[in-house]
Amino acid sequence: MNNPLFDALFAPHEGSARPFLVLPDDSPVTYGDFFDLSGRVANALFRLGLQPGDRLAVVAPKSPMSLALYAGAVRAGVVLLPLNIAYTAAELSYFLANSGAGAVVVEPSRAAELAPIAAETGARLLTLDAGGKGTMTEAVAAEGSAFAMVPRADDDLAALMYTSGTTGRSKGAMLTHANLLSNARVLAEAWRFTSDDVLLHALPVFHTHGLFVATNVALVAGASMILLPRFDVDDVLRWLPQATTMMGVPTYYTRLLADPRFDRSVTANMRLFTSGSAPLLAETHRRFEARTGHRILERYGMTETNMNTSNPYDGERRPGTVGPPLPGVVLRVVDPKTGDPLPAGETGMIEVRGPNVFKGYWQMPERTAAEFRPDGFFITGDLGFIDGDGYVTIVGRAKDLVISGGLNVYPKEIETVLDEMPGVAESAVIGVPHPDFGEAVVAVLARDGTTEPDIAAIERAAARRLAPFKRPKAWFVVDALPRNTMGKVQKNRLRDRFGDIFSAKAR
Ligand code: AMP
Image (cartoon, rainbow, N blue to C red; front, side, top):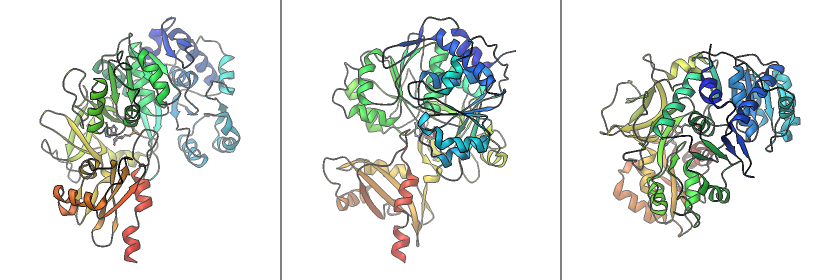
């Protein structure tokens, strides 16, 4: 009998005195201590009445204990359901009801607000604060560390992760032991992680990037993690000299570049910076290399699939691309309507198949069936192309594609042109309803603070490079584009804000 994730990620570290976590106050949590803590958590989960396969929702701040809840859940065969602490009570009510969670761990300041929801959905309510204190910790402290792990099969669920769901209802992606473990092993190997590595961890742990990409890779390699509560430039600059690797979203790197203290001396001990969860501008990649001498390694994945592609560790890391598929992952680009594979260089729907790809959406068999092809490929919803060397470029989400006058307009193509214009830090191109064209291309430019963007001049410059049907029909200038915590531009919010300009004009 075995438990794939426990056997590979936690069991090898029993009794080890090596540091697993280094905390901002410099105190280490050894691998052995963390292993013992996972046993206490597993005992506590059983005492709370959770059975193997039951769901444990966690809406608590990042701390060693929130990571131990993951380890303990794996050990007890319980399915972890990590949730963004920014969710409202109404959103959490949906997740708890939809998942049928048996217990939910919340930040103490939200306990009163969430107690009625937990009671209604039948979930036990426990608390855990940023310092690791709360009723969950008390329950854990009362337990012994000895716990015989609960056997699990490769195909058993380890986690349920709700997608951010900017359109329609959020769906629970069912991730199995085999999904998470195969990806952890592939990434640790691809990125050359060893027990000598120290990973600077500033990502949230309610998202696949911080929880599975970062933490599982560190665990499988036996590496240490400097566990920062959040991304803060001062903290990152302070800790980078002690780290060898960092995983980030693109905004982390642009914020570091905006600070003159970020230079070669701060990054001298580093061997690898990776980026993902949102597109890294080719320009950021180049500025980063000029400043530090490091070439950021960009990879591409999603909650449902774990990581799909990665630029190579050795070999060419191409700015603006997400690299070739990882070992074991089959990736193809197809015509979204027919499903027929497209030749190299042509843009279409990205589909993936492999041990990394999730089992389906929780209690949504129709949605699951609609998003898988009969031959097992998952339809990612991302548009992109593969070049002659096998490198993949993401062009954007299919739902962000603009169809103007019946012609496809890929926002990224326009954004790449606009990003270069004077006074523009970055841009977002959206489609909004238009009485004549169906949808019209609208450009939203974020100021870079040097000079006010001159729309007339930008329009003329864009007209020299873009066919008429691709040219924006309306322009807006803002201080910053709206982003979520993972650094993704929230185009749905831009569509909400600017969506009725043509329909309003038509009235
Ligand atoms: P999530 O499930 O929150 O991790 O979001 C997954 C989505 O993020 C993908 O489907 C892509 O649209 C986007 N994404 C992730 N990594 C990249 C990347 N390196 N470049 C562009 N988009 C990315």
